[in-house]
Image (tube, rainbow, N blue to C red):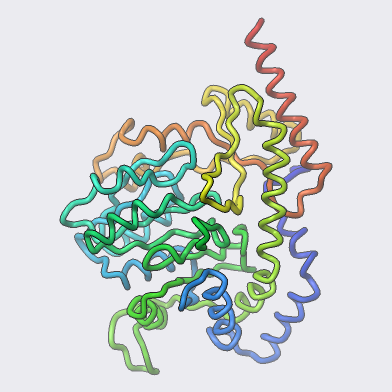
Length: 378
């Protein structure tokens, strides 16, 4: 058991317990569970929050990516450009449509897609681009939008970790043709189960996703296309409406915690604090340090021994995963992604983190840093 966990969902629940329990009871009393009024209201609120015309609730963030891509025209034999430094769901959604993930490397400063590499990776099979707004920071989107528009290629943003993040004054999800949001419980806006949402200004994408999420049916027992069973339920929507009202406040607390860490860590040798591009508003789904790869695992062990939970996102890049062996990539193909896998770790940054816990984390990080220097001098 960690004294300072990476995330404390119990603390968040405690802050909304009365309101959440009342909302859940209302759904139970009404016995309306799938789609329905709460989902419709949440869709309107999320669309307004993200700055898009439409939002469609689906069963998960993974489904949100897959349905948005299919609605954007991606199918068997197509290629979709994305990054290998992300959770498997990003590429998995591409593969499950019969398309091929075409990887480009990340910018090592932001851990997000390097826009300079996108155009050279395009082929006549390229149908879409999936930039991943990782850890709560947006990709540098303007160069990607420019090249995509010039070639008639769709952009589906992976916003799983970035609801509320902004790029040049525009919210994540409103920058491309569609955005895919995850409501997995650990996300900044997390449900009490699974859920996701597609946000878009595109009428065709909106209508297609709405159709696909209910087995391709616009009216009961009439199916115009083959679809999916991918519906957001009212219980989750009722909880998410309550949390959405607090999301910006929680994000500001995360930024406050990140600033506290940065003040203490920015001058430590061999530790790199998160870089925030000047045109971005970061929501710190994760606070990620980069350290010497030779020290990273020892660092994690030291923190664990002192009751502090940390985590590696992600230890193996997608191009080196067994399930993508057939793509033909090899070690060294995406050096920045591989470096990030070997050198990064996340520290607790959740909004309910107590000041005493933050001070304790800082104390132990500095303690480890000092021990490393002592060992190296001996």
